[in-house]
Length: 198
Image (cartoon, rainbow, N blue to C red; front, side, top):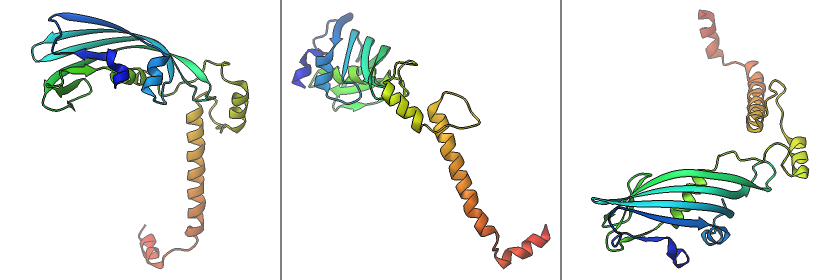
C-alpha cells in the first residue's frame, strides 16, 4: 500500500475539530488500484474528518466522471459520479467492520488508508445497468445486438433484459407443458379411483 501513502490519515495526531482534505483521483489512482470495474476517471474528493470522543467521523463527497464499459456494446462510456458517504472509525484491538459505516482499526496502528474506501464509494455509485445514451453505442455492436436480441411479440418496451427473460421463461413453460402432455396419456391406475370421487 506504499503507492497509496498520501491517502493515509494519521488519527492519533489529528487535531481536535474538523479537518479537511482534498484529493483528485485520476488515471494513476485507478491504475494503482488495478481493479476491472473502473480503470479510468477523474474524480474530486472532499473529505472532512471530525474527532469526537472515542471515534472519528469521516464525511466524503466525491464528484467527477469515470469511464466504464457499456453493458450493451462494451465500448467505454462516461459515468457521472456524485456521492456523499460517511464512515465512523473507532480504535480497538483488531480490525473489524461492525457495519457498512462503522469500522474498528487497531489502536497500535493509529492510521487509516482511505484509498480502497474511495474506490468502493465510486463503484457503489455506478448504476447496475449502464448503457450509452440512445444512438451513442458502437454501431457495429448495436447492429449485431439488435440482430440477436430476443423480442417478445406482446411487449413493445425498450427494456432488453425484461424481454429476454420473458422470452426464456415462456420457452421454459411451453417445454414443461410439452413434457407433461406425453405423461397425461398414461395414468397410474391407483389415481383412477380418486377421479371417481370428484
